[in-house]
Length: 319
Image 1 (cartoon, rainbow, N blue to C red):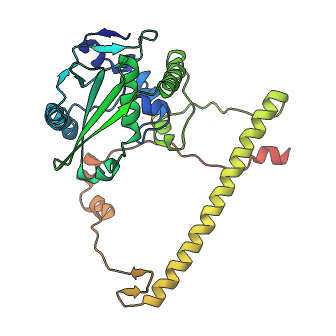
Image 2: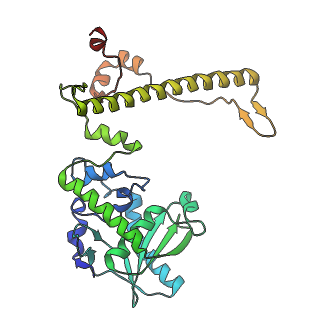
């Protein structure tokens, strides 16, 4: 059986526990957050997003009761607010804040809202994977067997779907959560993902004057040096291919424009290619600075950012 505690203690300090909205990121299956990004929030190295004034979030909260009642009307199942929040019996940092319980059953309900532009994510039997993992987390923590997820789509469509508890999947989630939380307690970042670039920029927004030196002085450093140099060499090769492809793209586009000339475009059985005029407004910073230097200075800000550059080590080449 899961333990439980007052809601207030859980919702005010999200960095102190793993909740249902965190588990997809931990599993590397979130479209919005990576394990590293979540780690920076749990360790408070970077602030978590402030959602207090986000209208979509506020409206979603306001509509939760409507979605719950609509689910009851559609299914005939009575629902009630979960009187308590729950935590895993063995790991108190694994917690669940459930939207609704289905009265007289071992079932629960998760309420969602989304824009009409996301309606395809709910077609047929489809459920966004982040929400499947969230509901599965709640089922495992609360010890319940069936979860329902109800969604109001763009205020125009209502759908509800069922998720049955999968113990094997939940056990995998628990193991991933344990590993992630060890990174939090040890203050060691988890493995990065390809889209962690912005997080790394925020996390390491400044630098010291210290230069790490990797030279093959012994077997351990030799392996590290070789691995790093192979990574850099491969990056250079990839960038070279990208440059070649960009040049090829520009050549082909120029050739197509030369065929279109002063016409609107060209239509074939397979393609419609247009070369249209469009207007854009640009701010003339140079002229503004020359004519309104006082205002330019007043409203100018200096931004600092780090740039990665690669060059040959000329000292080694001389040696």
